[in-house]
Image 1 (cartoon, one colour):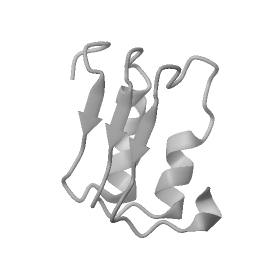
Image 2 (spheres, rainbow, N blue to C red; image 1 turned 135 degrees about the vertical axis):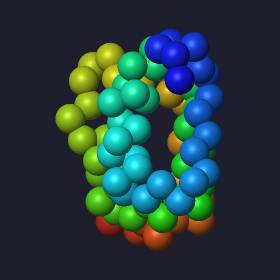
Image 3 (cartoon, rainbow, N blue to C red; image 1 turned 60 degrees about the vertical axis):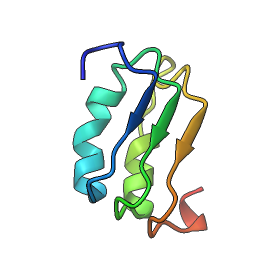
Image 4 (tube, one colour; image 1 turned 180 degrees about the horizontal axis):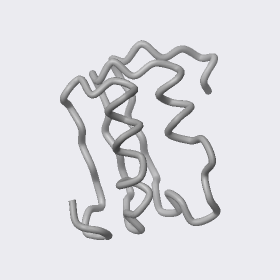
Length: 78
């Protein structure tokens, strides 16, 4: 993934929390990212929390949609 080139990123590899954590630094360097599809990746509350933890004022500034369907997260992380 080259910096700033993707408007949508889809990850469907059962990445889980560890995979999402590893992806966070790359995703935050995508200034034009508009959508993120993370369905069916075994991401739970901890993984969702890691995605939004320590957000800077410029992180995900253009992000409009995040899809987390078919993951074991609960309303507790919302």
